[in-house]
Each structure stands twice: as structure tokens, then as C-alpha cells.
Length: 510
Image (tube, rainbow, N blue to C red):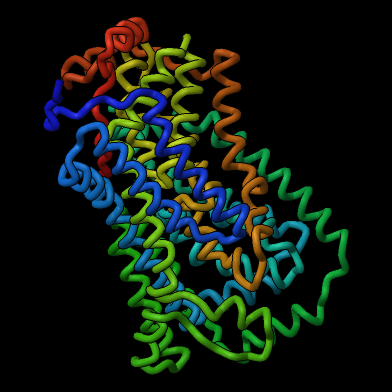
């Protein structure tokens, strides 16, 4: 008996797990056995393994390639942001913006309160800009310099930066992920933001207290090296001219973001403003500015802390991250097109009982998609599309789902080193530079706000708090918009009959 190759088979649960397990095994070999933090080739192997399984199931290469490229296209706006972030870093260092923040940070901020201040500053900037990646690459970089001057371990500073930047991104109405989560679940943007406050505010307050305690303990455990701080500040003031014009580029970008200009044009204006300031205030040549945008800033002050921190940036500095993002998107797209992710989601849902199980399934699926596919957008779009009908069928507002997606998707993404967000953090903050090895990954458990929020969300659900039932208006909207509605009982019946039972998930970014 022959089967029609034009009608591919649905993978079994074991077959759906096979490419994921195999890819994670290759990834573990590269990271933990070979000790190389370069997940690109293992993910390429994952694409090949998944394609072979897709071929076995009856998928043609052209269909698999189209599905893979569709997901890659979803990530193109993020790749554009990465390009502009690289250019911004190079030019803002040349303009003196980043060095000036480091200079006055060392002069004015007390080491005991530095970590708490770093988290709060990144949160404010990220809310204003609507981009955690841009915040990490600019303000976060400057804060790493201040932390180094105070003798604070870089992973502690990075943890505070990540906590603030990604929490600010999570609640910013300008953020792409904050817009994506309500878009795929069918709720309004500002209702979604309000519904995240019960987990966002407590998690930030707890993290703030931890950073205050840690800052005091770290400061008490060592004597402040005033000579090193003096050397850094003297080196910075000797290499750059500091005045109010130097702060125009970051302030301009924040003003444009507050005025609701999209991230890409706002960042590009920031690049141009930085170039103007570098030319007019720092006396940089136009030819040199093009070089800084392309390959990053270079200087030699004779102070190792300054040179290692400020010799960076440029479009090419993001090539490693951009390649990783594209490969991770391709892997996630291949898993989706042959049905592996859909089968895994369905297998999870048929075991679910009640709202607690639904919330656990949603947040854990978003987190696992971050680990498996390496992409924060897919981690929100996939479970959002697939789980929304079940939340509706069980009578719960999909606001519950959109909050879980942000907590398992947006906030967990920077904690996965091979995820696009994790790669941006590691590359932008130089956590693996200078032979740091795997020690640079210690920022992951220290990004307290990122993993406290999902835990608080699950705790609330267990206690029956902040769970929203769908009202008559929301039900009427489901009907008016033709949203799918599926109960858990119907899903289990469909699964028993061998039907997919879940709608296809196609990520889209507004």
C-alpha cells in the first residue's frame, strides 16, 4: 500500500520528540563536553535532523523550506533592531554618551546601591524605548563599566541589567512582544498590560530588595579601590569631552519613543544624532564614524578596564547574534511545519485538568519553546494560538493566557544562552569575553525578576487569585470575531480519535 506524499502524516509523540531530543543532545555536547559556547552548528544539525523526519513523514522539501522561511521572515524586524543596536553602540561610545554615563555613574552612585539602581534605570529606559535589546546594548553596557569600576562581579551587574531591561520591555506598550501576546490571544493591549501588574510589581520589588542586600554585602566584602576608580574616570575624561550635548542622542531616542515613534526609525535617529555629536563635540572624522558604525569603536587609553569595555560595537559585532537568530528561527520553523510543536502542545493539553493546569501548560510551553526553538517570538505565538481556544472553551478570559505567555516567553528568553535574547545579553555585555568561560552564564540565576514573575503567576493560580473569568462582553467578542472555542473534554475526544484538535499556529508581529 502506498501513501500519497502530498498528504504528510502527523508525527507521533515519540517522533515529535526525536528531533528536539537529538538537537539538545548535540547542543549539550558542544556546550558542556567541548566547552564551546557556539550553538550555531548544533542548531543547523537540528534543522537537518528535523528535515529528515519531515521527509519521512511525507513533507516535500519545498513545503518545508517555505515554512522555515516564513518563520525566519517573522524575525526580520528583530534582526534590523540588532543591526541598529550594533551601530548605536559604536557611535554612542564615539560621541561620549556611554563614557559619560560611566564617568558620572562612578562619581555619583554609591556601590551599595548600584545593583538596585542599575535594575531601576534599565527598567525605565526599556519602558521608554520599548526594546530590551537596545537597553542592554547601550545603558546596560555603560552599567557594566560602572560595576567593573566598583569591583562588582560582572554576572551580578548583568543580572540586574537583564532584570530591569526585560521587565521594562514586558510592560512597555511600544514593545513588540508586549503587542504580540495580546494579538495572538485576542485581547486589548492595555488590558493585557494591566493584567500583568499583579506579578510584575511584586517580582520587581522582591528583586529590588535582593539587589539592595547583595550590593551592601558585596561592598562590605571588599575595600573600595579608589585608585582604580580614579584611573578609570581620569582616563575617560582624558579621552572624551563631556558636556550636555553628549547626552542628546540617548535623550532624543527616549523622547521619540515616548512620542510613539517605532523602534527602528527612533534608533536610526539615535545613530545619526550620535554621529553628529561625535563629529561636533569629540572631533571625530566622518570616515572614522562610518568605521565605528561598521566595525565598532577603538581606543587605547592604557587603562585596561576602559579599553576592554569601550572597544566594541558596530554592525559586525552583531553578526554572531544575527546568525544565531536566523538559525534558531529556521529550526523553530522546521519543527512547526512538520507538526512537532503542535503534537507536543496537544499531548500536554490532554493531560491538563483545570485552570492551574492550563496556566502551567501555557507558561511552561512558552519557556520550553524558548529552549527548543531559541526564539522569543515563537515562544509567544505558538502556545498563544494553540491554547487560546481551550481557555475560551473552559470559560476563562484569554488575559490569563497572555500573561502566562509573557512570563514564560519574554522573561525566560534572556535566561536561555542560545536563545536570541540570551545571545544578545551575552554578546552585548561581553560576558564570555576575556576567557571568562561558562562563568559568564552566572547572570542567569541572578536575573531574579525574570524567573520570580512566572513563579508568582503560578502561585496566584494555585491560590485562586487574579484569575479572570470571561464575561458576557468578551464571549460576544469571541463570537463576533469568529474565534475558535474548544473545551478540554472535546480536545481529549479529538485526540482519542486521532485528530489534531488544535489550530495551526502562524506567528505574526504587529
